[in-house]
Length: 462
Ligand code: GDP
Ligand code: IMO
Ligand code: MG
Image (cartoon, rainbow, N blue to C red; front, side, top):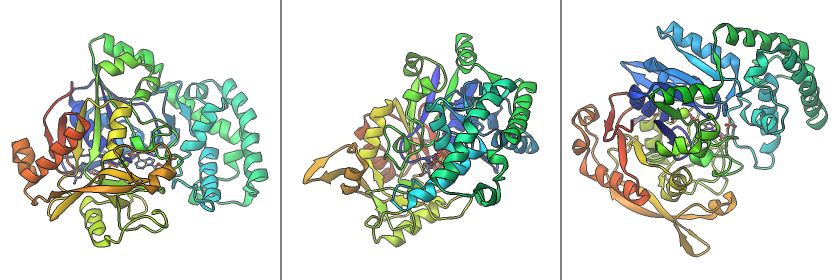
């Protein structure tokens, strides 16, 4: 059986935490899309693990698999594994031979394109990890796959074709003098990033290492075997439904499909296998957003990210939620955008993925407010609509129609987690049940704090 975890909003909903809670009953945990643009947090026994690539289940000692739908930066992968080893874990990580490799030139081009787009309001505020350019090369049939790293002749062939095209793009289209440029805050050697020989040597070594440690797999076959043997798989989505390249707020999205359909494509398991399992939508009780684009229920205003005519003057409330929820960038410390829960966004996500259960996190963050609002529907062109319009421009014109809920007190949330659902303050339960009813999806878990034991579990999907 499979359980697929999908972010229902704009990422950072607490997917890592839920994967950690539920993967107790899983044999392996599999990422099916994205790369090291993700940041999934697992907190247990005072230890905090921030995982960008390695599936969250490895903290519990489960096998972690990066499926063919992922894009993999081998340098991040080995660094992350090393860090986990230093902390006393023994991560067993496998990588699909069909997964695509993020190369240094992808990261360089990610940065250059974001810069170029920022003049025309097209920049998505990417993580700069080279995600978009790598998926572009995959679709353009000029990508390098993990399996190619283990076959030096193929690797060289691929590099010899692709590297000059990247150099030409940077020099001739963007007019950048590569030899004298600074890329990735100086982390990326500008010369080596566009040098076939240097790339060949570095990536062949990664291939040797992947081979020596027997880390590469034919993902679909490997995972099917686990299921055939009666095992269970947890499929860990990264990002969120509104960041989905098809179903999200294009072009302010990532370049993959976090929605559940891709759990089949990105692992090599059949759609019926995924569909017979459970699909749990992870919801943050409010909105947080890293990046640009409209956000109808946004509170306050974040320079450089909020649209010029967006946001609201509820700065104090925004700051309160931001501080309580720790909504500041982990690397830069920049404030994240925050807003009220957006029900049309959730209805859209629930339909696109077919959620069979919901986990709603961060209700402790909203505790202590007099009232909590929810964007129940939108008004667009004088009409009330209950789901997201298909174009981001129309979405930006939507005026939310709010419903107001009475606030709930701050309580001892560890006590609540230990006691169970009935211990959650009544007004918070009213809020949770409203969301569950509107989405016609049962509540499986409620997050009342960041740690493993801070979750009220109503259903165990395995
Ligand atoms: P992910 O990307 O979906 O895995 O989420 P992140 O790890 O990026 O961000 C979620 C943050 O909220 C992390 O710091 C978690 O430890 C924390 N968190 C998760 N669930 C809860 C919750 O229910 N309450 C609180 N206060 N924090 C939570
Ligand atoms: P997790 O898995 C929040 C956002 C970026 C940017 C857009 C495109 O931790 O929830 P990319 O680097 O993917 O090309 O950036 O998507 N973004 C995320 N926001 N959580 C994430 O992952 C994200 N991954 C990408 O901020 O707006
Ligand atoms: Mg995250």
